[in-house]
Length: 308
Image (spheres, rainbow, N blue to C red):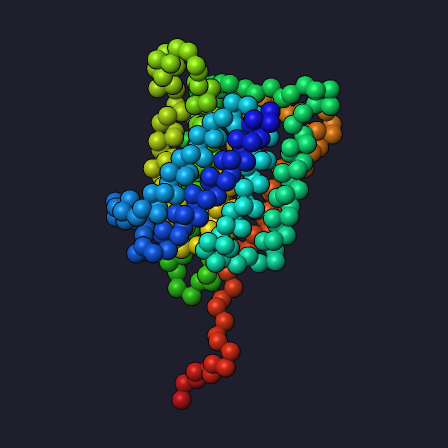
């Protein structure tokens, strides 16, 4: 169990650092848009800093595979949410992004949620949760395909609204929810891939993996997620869009992953309360996030221009 907890915390570190490096690289690049995906890819691939961030995210993917081999899906998501605290700290240190009082209260709720989920992991008698290894392909596709379509549609709707003149500056909540749905599908696919990890019969395992929907779901979410997340990261604060994306991803994976892979919630009332309470706190984080950034204020002493 503790190997899984350590791997989840390592994945948090790698994902947070990777997103911050990508955001810093995107800040120095020309404006990118999902309407020009080839140009977007050409620009980011030409940035060594962005490549470094992407490799860091890839290392986080490897740590996540270990997590899903050792921890139940719902418990893993509660720990992944804790990475939001590190992400905000790194954003403030490396990107100079400031957080609001409401966002700082949300971070406190996340730390409490992490503690509650970790405490729910082990039975009082010493027994551990059962970690499922497989799920019906038809059920996975039934859950994932509409989610992919919904994420792409929501992102497109946010793009259309953002182009309206005189609209208040967006914080990126809509973008975060849309990308979070895609990464939620990706997380279920990673869970599926982890079930094929083996130390023997590697060739057979690879063939069986290619017959499953998981590699193709990863490919689809990788392509769409890359283009959508980079455009959103460039125009919005990483300290807000990534927490929203992470919260949606974790909630999506905890709910649909637990149902799809048939992992039971704790039977002990205290552990069940702790795990559900941690999830409820994560939901409160998303609801507490402001939808718009405050409008920039005029410098002190500046005179208001009035028509003659």
